[in-house]
Length: 210
Length: 231
Image 1 (cartoon, rainbow over the protein chains, first blue to last red):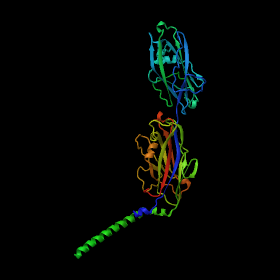
Image 2: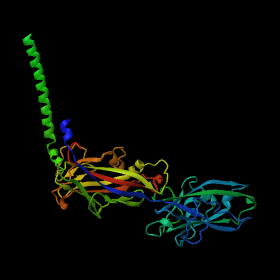
Image 3: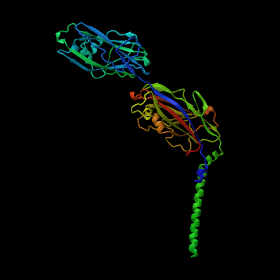
Image 4: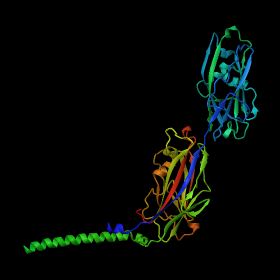
């Protein structure tokens, strides 16, 4: 004990401080109002993006866009889409009498109608994509996705609202629809998930690859 | 009677002598073991200095390794980042210890169920080395090249971080839980060119899910220079 007590043992500590490792954020926002490209979205969720006008009748067409942007700091390369809560009522399934057009806007470039391409994959390949065909592909799970194959980096939603995206659906009440569709209705919910990483196995891209 | 007393006295004396011998031997042994340490009581300076890629020699450095806006899977080689250590003073150092500590920082006020340890488990150390101009130690495996001088207290495993939580990765969490010990210290007589460096590369794990979005870790790496092996 005496021996231990007489010796001072030196040590000295130096520290590398403030080594900060911070993760980014991916925060997709939605809006029913595309407005000007580059404008931020407004909400985590929206309702009534695609609602048929009053007294919708055979031959009528309407189109609306769901606007996406990302106010986070990490870009998204993919957006996944899931149709769910699919319902219809009336004497006939109205979805069979609704013809869908699908267009997308990546930054300032809008694609042509992708319905014929999608019909080849999820429909009967007659060149017409009905709403029933469209909604029937992997309902209640992520069945569709999109990415920007026009840009070199594949980013669909840039960070800090840099690059945005619109999903544009058009709906035509088929001219051939008869009286059996009077008073009929249908609905669906669409859940969208922006992803940084890219696993799209089993899903169908909303546009034909360029 | 006399012979009995003499016998007891003889036994007592021999016991005392035996104790004294043991005590002296003990002191002797201790002096031997701590011989190198006795010189330190002269009060000679024993000072560790550090510098990194953008700071000169001083007592501590800051922000040597920084990665912002990380995404799962991002790798940071930090090829130009380092901490170099040098000893000032005339007292021989025995060994160096390196340990890590960290705290959670971030934009989320109350991240649900995510602790600093959870975030630290997502910070995978992909490369970590301690080296000089003549030797190199891989701090992930303990493998050495160039015959680095092993301090007397060196034991197998001292020079590497163990996968403490058994997740198959060496992370900041493991580094904090299993500090490095008994590394060759910097020597006061060696010039800057021979002073040892530490470097590391990290990766934000692909396993990091949305719970880790917007979070950060403020990490510190402490280098302790010790004079004796028992410290």
